[in-house]
Every structure is written in structure tokens, then in C-alpha cells.
Length: 353
Image (cartoon, rainbow, N blue to C red; front, side, top):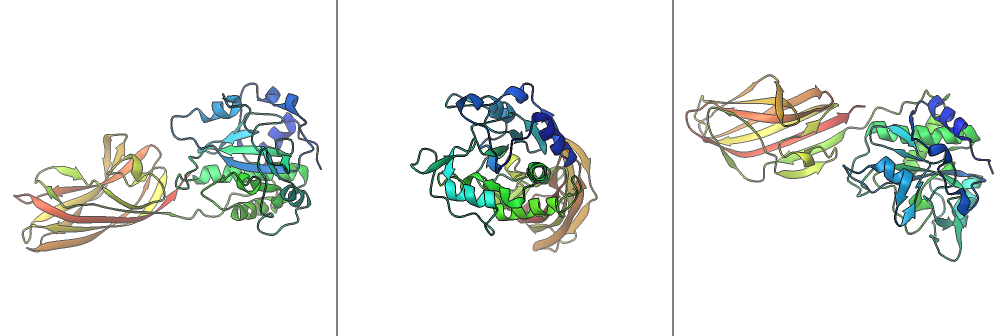
């Protein structure tokens, strides 16, 4: 049992943990306390917003919508890793949930996962979670494919650890909405047991020292769906029309783009070119773009024709800064068109903050 943190103590705890904090105007008096008690509090609940690009996600969490008035959480953690504080007090985020889960959180008496929930908002045995949990709404489509950038995930762990540290709680005081209500699926895209392990690691260190582990690389595997003709005399971007794996989500916004900065990547592109005369050359290079504008080129690789089918495996290893995207471009230096029979790109991408 704990008395909720004051607004000033919450801000101080987040900043001490190393969070980038944005105080949305009016957040300190934005709450639903007139609908019921705020506290005693027992834990922190993690959600995803089910929003995509172009949504004023912070405004949505602050104001709510026609069916559910705001605030919809204590704060909104955006993909850039900023913790936007949107409510101070009771918020419409948790709804009804399972009392057995609440007891397990209060006692921190469970293993990797709390007991299965059998309740939801409006069910006969439901317990009011809005009075008992802080809530972080975290910007994500919630489709299981939208990535969680490292900066955002680190902020989610740190913000949760900040509240737990301020109250003297352990990592088992953090749960996902899906662990509270059997109607819910959020957060999707990572496992809450792993999230709690990261919170535990943060709490094991003095506030502000945890920076996470080295990020795991994300895999991108793209190809060309059908062969195409490559005319001589001009650089041409390879359009990757087949998407086997796109864990970063960067290819989905541009057919020829395979990585967007800031990021490091390492891998290969395998090319099969037909009709390239023996000794003739097709050049290949990586090129950076700023939006749709060509910005810079990287060193050239030469593919020398063998007189029949010509095969080459070329390295693609670079660092790309923020705001740039990377493509593979080809230049046919033969006198006549050749055929790009296949192009397969396989890279590991380390996203940077």
C-alpha cells in the first residue's frame, strides 16, 4: 500500500532515473479523481496506444476521445524516448481487472508471470485498476510488427523503474494490461517477463546508471519479385519488391530503401545478372538519400561479366546518420541492356538513439 507520488516527486524520480521528461501543460491538475479514489497505489501498468504516424498521440492521451475522456494514462512514452506527463492522479487506462493479479502484485509473490487473469472491465469480480496503478501509454500500432525503438524501450524501463524505486517496490510491481484484463492484448511486440528483468536490472543499480544491454540487431531480408531489364548509362536504384523479413519497418516506407538512420548495418546483397558480356561491367554502390533527394554515394563495386549468368555477392556495411535512408544502385556500363535476374539483400541493423 502506498500513497501516490506528488507531481514534483514523480518528475524528480523520472529525471533521477535519466528520463527525458516533457511536462504537458496542465498535466498536474488533469485527472479523473472526481470519479473515484486515486490510491492507495500498488504498481505500474504498461500499454500500447494503437496509433500510427500522423496521430497527435500525446494530445490523445491527455484529452482522451468521445468514448473515453482523458487523461488515458500518467504519461505517454513516444518512439523518440520522451516521457510526456499527461495526468496526475486517476486516469482511464486500466479499467477492471483480476483481484488475484492485484494481490500477486501487492505481495510481489509470483514468478515470471502473475496468475492468469479471468476478469475484465464490467465483469462480476473485477477490481478497479484506475485507482491502483500508474499507467504508461507507449506509442505503438499494437500490431505485433511495429518496432519498439531502443530509445523508447529504454525510456519505458527507466520510467517504470523510477516509480518502483520511489515507492520501494520491486520489478514485479510492473505488469502489462494483458496481465490485468482478459480482454486486452497490450503491450504487443515484447514479453513482459523480459521487461520486468530489465526493470530489475535498473533497480539493482543506483538511479540513472542503467543504460540497457547492447541492442539486439534487427533482421532485414528483401528481394526482387521478378527479373527486370537494366538499361545502360544511368544509375538505377534496386526496387526490393519482395519483403521476407523487415524487423526495423524501414523498408515498408520505400521500395528501394533498406535502412534508415540513425543506424548501423552489416550484410550482403546477392546479385544474378544475365546477358552481361564477358569482361563488361555493372557497377554497384550504396547511396544515401535525404527524403527523396540523392545525398551521397559510397564506394563502387564492379561486377565483371562472365559471358552467361553472372553472380556476385557484395558487402553492405555502413553507419547511416539520422534523417538519411540507404539504397543499392546499379550502373550498367555494357553497350546493351542486361537482365537483373535476382537481387537478395540480407542485413542486420542496429538502430541507434
